[in-house]
Length: 264
Image (cartoon, rainbow, N blue to C red; front, side, top):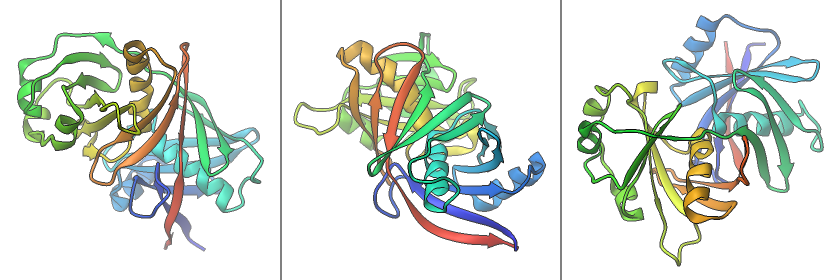
């Protein structure tokens, strides 16, 4: 029997929304080049590879071009696969050993809650080409290990962005989260989009790692600890965010299996 690959749409409760990730639960570790080739073949923003350990699972994430140190939606998809395919019982906690340390996932009804490291941003001076590449005025710019975090004037600006990716890729920091507060009558506290041509992904549909940055950013500005966030890509996705300070943030989302295949 070949390697089973499950494709899951994460941060959504409906097929063809949220962010798709491929999940491979391996019987034994595989070479890096093999995992990178599988990720390239799947051609999704992330492919997750898991290997069972005594106290959880080793978890690694690959885009079609590189391995990344942290990925929220593929971790959510991995937890969903472990529970839905019987690798863990429904009441068990999913423990993932990763390049970003130990990550934990818990079932919360129809939602999956992830315990992730927060990613604080620092003041920075953005190059003028950043505004030019995004095609909009920048209200504020900070920087974190994921890239730039840019606040713009309104939700409409976020939703209507059409970046110049060729110009963005020429910048020393090519990846950028763009965000804004929503209107008072919105069900969401803030919206965002994540452009990551430096990772081989022009736009990531829904990004858990970006919300590790957005959590502390919006807590400082809105003075609250609980958020309902929307990532306004064409697929769209909803993320519950809980951050009360410190070095950990809780992200919650839903997930649905879309297809399953066998690598021959």
